[in-house]
Image 1 (cartoon, rainbow, N blue to C red):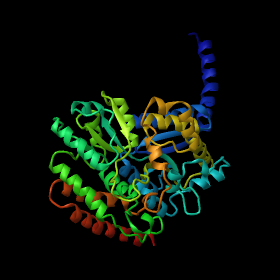
Image 2 (cartoon, rainbow, N blue to C red):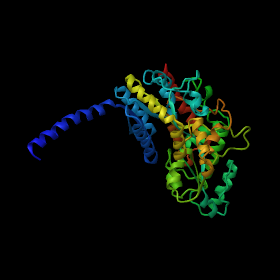
Image 3 (cartoon, rainbow, N blue to C red):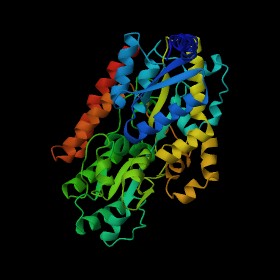
Image 4 (cartoon, helix red, strand yellow):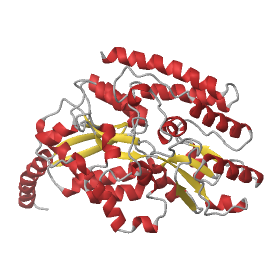
Length: 440
């Protein structure tokens, strides 16, 4: 290249570089912290990249902050340091903590109103949105990934035990009969579970219209007290302890450690979140079915509806109005029927809007994938009661840890069910009193 050509090229670069910098600077960056990894991490990354590609004003940057507990703690620490993200994904047990964090959050209904972004709370499934909404009907956080417990069944395992592979038990006594036959057929793990407190204590009560705590499971005040040590809970945990002793139930861990055991074919039955569907569909090399969580038929009125799990998106305070405008656009995008229908179909999480549910039906997804509508039917089939609309407690993550510890003592044969539940209630109430004091 001669000298004159070099000068010409330099002139072009001088003109282009500022234009490129100007284009990049024009985008307002929105930080989103979440707790997804693996397949779910890939899916949220795609949602973010698709949103970024759909417009040029905002750039959403997603960051994994560990598991749910770690993400919540990271968000709290960041706020205290003045370095909070714009959006923080918080699992449902952190809802009361976020509500009590005065000055740390900006309610979603305010974000949408100030940005003049169309927002209709009634478009969201009532059983989902109600958990994140005030008594006055104002939505505090956006339901994003909502799930509920269901039962997964390895059809090959049933057939190997001489059972009809299409069997779908509806009650716990029916499950017990199946577990016995699986054990007799050589299964080393007839049943395992994920999230034992959520499935077998919290949801157990809701499904049978029995309270987990007073004050409508905490919805009516922080001066609530735990009461999950009643006859129903003692009966259910006692039965599971019997199964553990006899090799019918195999404990895998406090979170979702059982998922790998089911997906590998080791365990035949698996109680887990409806959102486990994504992993099972991607990894299991055997035919499986999804069916309703079993119930105890001798409890009058059972089954009712199961309760919500998963997480919502909380908008953090302390940012500029133009940034909140970008947050509002992103939340609108996530709530769209097309995005939510695809999210629901890919993951097993509930569609958070009626439009997304209707679109999924129109697309024929439920007909082609039997059992994928179980979660939404189970959540919405009956009107929720004060005992079944959810649980909203302060220090709930720590309360769950206490329950996990006591249940582990039961599975190991160190405590009977009633003693363990009594002690979990006593220890948990101490945590609630600490939260009540701090909330004042």
